[in-house]
Amino acid sequence: ATTEIYTLSLHDALPIFRFEDRSRGKIEKRRWNFGDGTGADEPCPVHRYPKAGEWTVTLYVEGPDGSDRRIKVWEVVTK
Image 1 (cartoon, rainbow, N blue to C red):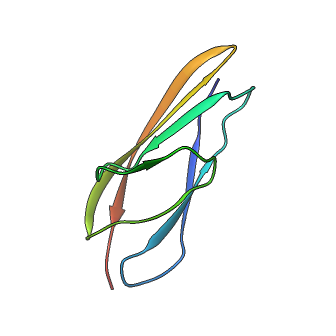
Image 2 (cartoon, rainbow, N blue to C red):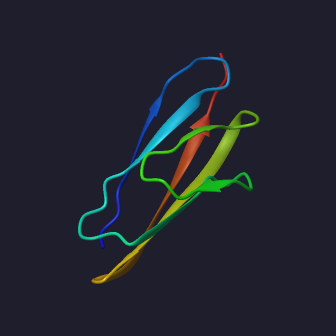
Image 3 (tube, rainbow, N blue to C red):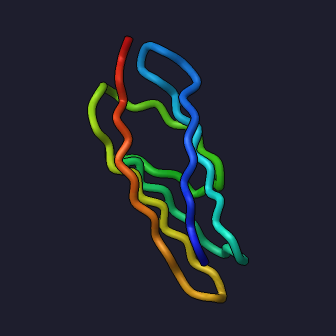
């Protein structure tokens, strides 16, 4: 499994992010870690961070072809 992460900021104050798993291959298990003690198992979760800062997001995926993870740092800015 090969992983990709895509995000879209939906609001201004403390942004709500929509993450998208663009992994290829058959995915049997996935786990998002948003870096703030929370996570999700769905392919396209929506998440609001509790405060501005840099957050490390990790996506783990597993399938019959193996496992993979992708790590990205997102900067959350308030307006």
